[in-house]
Length: 257
Image 1 (cartoon, rainbow, N blue to C red):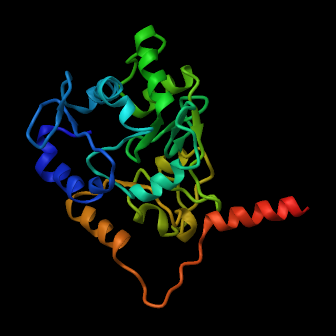
Image 2 (image 1 turned 90 degrees about the horizontal axis):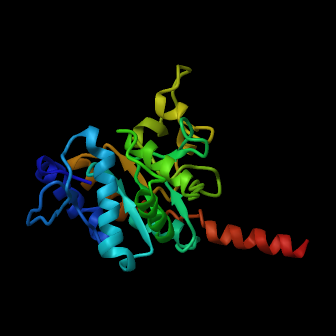
């Protein structure tokens, strides 16, 4: 999701970094350009963000439904580790109505996914979203995009997925890493921790080794995260967190019992 004013300051940096790791990227805007961007019949502005998201998902359903199994909505200031996202998605069936991201708890009984952290719809979830607007079961009732989309997901019986890793650490993040990894003194919790569906954790155990996203990542920081993700390695360190091997070992233990 982007706009004409952000192409130079934000979107081109997404295109040069994590966008290269995607199977396909569509840059949704209110204006068609040679960037290229897709022109949606909407006005720019935060008050129109949900309407823009509705139009974007309807466009994808019409033109690209058979081009992918999963559909990620991200902002032009989100950074995504695409390989980690693919790893999480590999465990699920895209023909089931699934919806995943950083789960918040207020307003919607089953919760909803943070828009800034990015969220993913399975192919069946996308079908149900579009059908909901066709039948009138879903409406553009609020300017709060992520909450309003979450309400439609609940109405259309799309199931939210727990995207924490096997140690209970979060993978999608609506703020940069420094908002989570530094253990703070006792204080009133910020809104994004109050909103968390699961008990929030501050300090080094806040975040999965297989993080998917951070939000509010601008220009230079896109390249910093790209370097840290794909190039920095400590010499002699053997990476020991192997979630698939741990799950397999647990399964063998259970079978033996």
